[in-house]
Image (tube, rainbow, N blue to C red; front, side):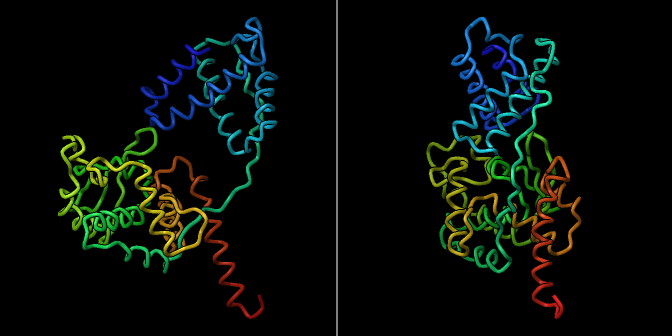
Length: 301
């Protein structure tokens, strides 16, 4: 089975162009499935042709008994489904054992976001007298102005910026490219930062990293934890929301657009969502806001 898992992961990486993080998640899930089979079945019973619907259900039941959350189980089942769909299409197996297995129902959580007064206050916090403050300001402005993902921000190169049209060439999930606009304030913050960006370079900064828009304190391309720490540092000064990740600024971007009347389909394109249903979670936020305004303002509410 390990050989088949390896070929599947290569398929995701080289043909589907999935990110290394996504491929790693698939690998973890499938190796967990492999370990379960080794632990519970003899070598005679643990063969691809003998794995059936009940076997997969036993794996899911084991996850439940071990206290794995419904959200994690749903993700693992999705990985297993994709793997067996791949094997079936390659005619390695004659039937797909994951058919008719229901995905655990996960209660939908509304996305965390900042209100307009909090985001305005946050964007004024970075110390623009220091190059790190200029970088932080540009990073925050760009995340809020565009709604791009963490990895999309990290992968930005100087040539991805179209200053005249105020747009970014963004490499999204599945290595899909999209063009997204940014605002005048983000443009101004970016230009100020880029004028001093060289101060962050070091002797170990590579030629490839010189193209990176955002540079870490060590002169390298900005990394996920670094961006997370920056965003977390500023959000905690203006809000007590539980989550303080870069994704909060993506949620904030989408929510503020919809609150101000933006078309849902347009927001979907700006976020780079595959399906409109993914974007629709933000409508719940705006509906709740409208209900709150109604309850406060209508004399008969």
